[in-house]
Length: 185
Picture 1 (cartoon, rainbow, N blue to C red):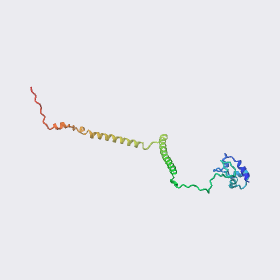
Picture 2: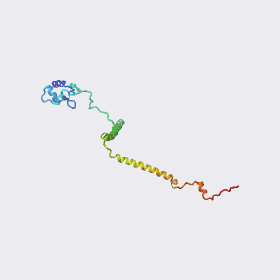
Picture 3: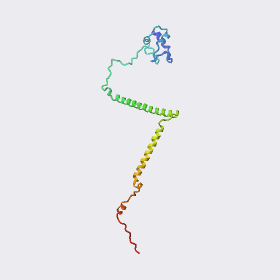
Picture 4: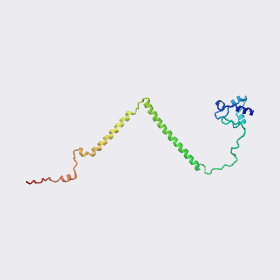
């Protein structure tokens, strides 16, 4: 029976999705139809060709000797997760995860901005806040101009109130009587 199973497996086509399961194993029903088997089980196929799959058409029964022996002692890492290589790899992984999160947040922000601009311009959607923003801009500009005028008024207050500034020399001479020099003929 194993020879018939191996013969049926040799007729399979790796490019035909109908003959294979999602994990790359041959479909039992298809192998059964190729070899005219009744009550064929997956275990029978595995016993006949243990290494056979969609990517490996090897139907030999030899088991690879390259697998490590379980009886051998494995050197244990006494540092555990504090090993410098593990710490470095974890930091690099955390860095890329953080960068990915920042990228996704920025992508969402820009996507939302693009959607808003596109909706407003392409669909001629009126921005309901445009008038309010223009009013607030005008008020802010008016307040800034008013503050500038008040500062200039304070600086030039004495000139604006007809109180002419008096120099220190004029102030010292203000109490003196003015005497005209005599004119001689």
